[in-house]
Length: 264
Image (tube, rainbow, N blue to C red; front, side, top):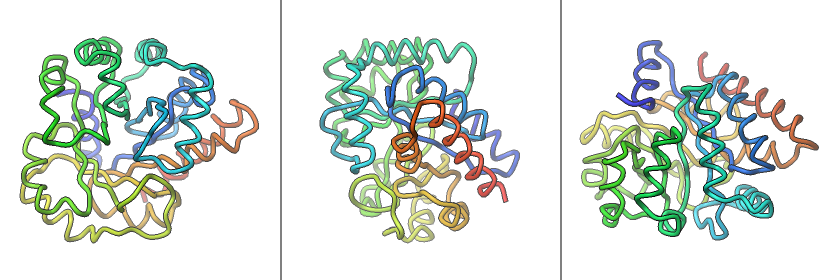
């Protein structure tokens, strides 16, 4: 088993749900990204997604779009992020994932990209703009270098769920609502029906993402699936902090609060 499978298996033994946090790599700088990874893990994050900054992040709402812009102003390159991950992997076994757009992989070179992910300790990729029907372009490299491509399931995926979950690896990323990322006060999906239907086709762990930002939502949604993904709320804290040290401290406090609510 890989790190993702190990973490979900351990959580299941402990009767706990996964807390998955998202930050944009290089926002506000790569040193702070490394510090945030350590702090989020120390405060209870089970998996951490690193967004690769991109000029046209079509799945992202305004908060994460601005984080992409801040990181790109620092002239962050994928190679720099790979090196940062390689360094931090020396001291942590927390599962790490990249969230990035397909064009970033094509520009880097698909085989080189997956090889470097494997060498530096990236466990999985979330590629929002890669349709299931086109995943064969990179799945050969994902298998070769044992880097999972995380499958996304949307509230509208019903007729396609049997197909797109057939060879899912790691966990299923279950999108709570249609549209782009961002904090929401309500969700589109009927999670009871959604998860009941998904269970007919796969038993791998399932995590809900898109829109979660407060304890009340965590208290409600933790009864569905195996984990929750929080992104924009964390990125917003980083944006509003006066300095990197404050960002790390406040994100740590936020993760600790979500962890406490998730474990109740």
